[in-house]
Image (cartoon, rainbow, N blue to C red; front, side, top):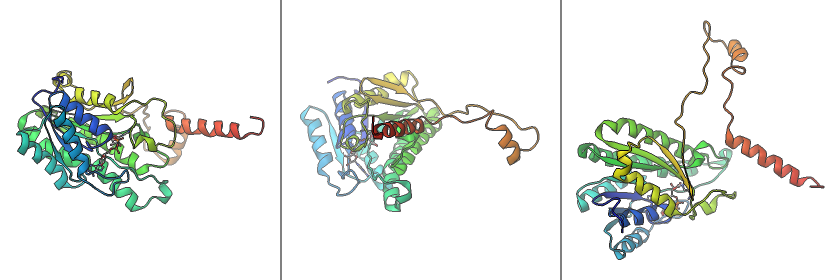
Amino acid sequence: MGNFLAGKVVAVTGAGRGIGRAVALAAAAEGARVVVNDHGVSIEGSEPTSSVADTVVKEIEAAGGEAVAVADDISTMEGGQRVVDTALASYGRIDGVVCVAGILRERMLFNMTEQEWDPVVATHLKGTFTLFRAASAVMRRQGSGTLIGFTSGNHQGSVAQANYSAAKGGIISLVRSAALGLHKYGVTANAVAPVARTRMSANVPMELKEIGEPEDVAALVVYLLSDRAREERITGQVYTIAGPKIAVWAQPRELRAGYAEGAWTPERIADFLPGTVGVDPMPLLEQLEAMARAAADQARPNA
Ligand SMILES: NC(=O)c1ccc[n+]([C@@H]2O[C@H](COP(=O)([O-])OP(=O)(O)OC[C@H]3O[C@@H](n4cnc5c(N)ncnc54)[C@H](O)[C@@H]3O)[C@@H](O)[C@H]2O)c1
């Protein structure tokens, strides 16, 4: 056992499987007392069971750590509150929350139903809000704490997961808002965009060139929860971790601007915009077009 998180109390959602489980085990191994939350659902979010969270608590205890299970659904306000209340009731404080819980309901936008949209946005985006909301009220009084949201490279856009992509983009804005709003109370907020082998990544229809294990992601999360990251004043950041690679994402900012002489009209904009302000090419669209060209080449009879 290390002591990177000695004395800290950390709550992890979606901690029963995959990345969340690795985060919970690593945090406990580094000295944290851990609230293990998992609703124990299928990849689409159905068939809940409490045994998934209980199993991880037993693993932590078997390794000599301290943990308590909460099987609630974190897409409800009560669920998020219960996770934080359990930390306070069991251990008297909350130093970090890590919102890892997630589900997938893949469908092209033109076929997507409300039942495919709502639960995905509720689990990822609202499920981060419910924890951040409950924990930040306590952290503000404590004058310290760390909030961590889970996003995805997919926040750039997605062909068949518009619900998931929109929720992941929302999580980044929520994290940046938390970083801004809680800065003066000594609370930090960051987001992690992982790429790791789990049941969820096994569902990705294309080969992932850069991928690692849930334990790689857990190492980054432990660091972000630690005083070492607080000393570096790391807040409002989005990090990708994919096996050996760690990357930081750019802050959104205006790329180029132009100014009208007099009022804008559609005609003036049509003359002005293409040659001056222009566009910022979309990397994923270029990748899609390259894939389509490669597929067309392959399909040629003499390829
Ligand atoms: N695995 C990857 O490569 C990858 C890539 C990008 C983003 N992510 C994100 O990382 C996170 C973890 O993904 P994973 O691959 O470990 O997935 P996973 O399916 O292995 O684990 C997700 C866990 O969340 C739990 N959960 C789902 N809904 C819940 C709810 N309402 N309340 C409480 N628990 C709930 C599930 O029971 C499950 O145990 C997700 O947010 C995912 O979107 C993963």
